[in-house]
Length: 159
Image (cartoon, rainbow, N blue to C red):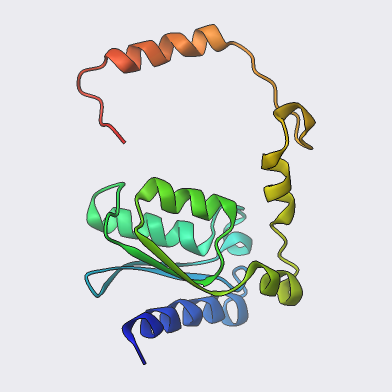
């Protein structure tokens, strides 16, 4: 077994435990690795925590960032038991993940677990005024004032 397969096997084991043993959430597990060492791991706990954002990848990123003391994970690889959803892909980009390996596809998750992300991809391609969740801009001037103060802040942390 290669190192990549060893790390993926751990992600799959986490997915099995959370879904089949703990019944905490869907069949999703993830690990984050840097320099051959696991620096974070997580499993889907959406059901157990009543939190729709508690995806395996999000949990693994939070775990790794907490352990590393940084909101960036350069040089890190994410191993996830299933193809990441749009939220988890965005989090991987924000965290500076360098590579992602996944096992099952979005189609597999739909076929075997009724997990369907396709509507999210469809929705974000639409103009804001045509999406199922109404989105409307209000109080822009007030928000811009806060942005201007933030822009002028000399001790802000860039990210």
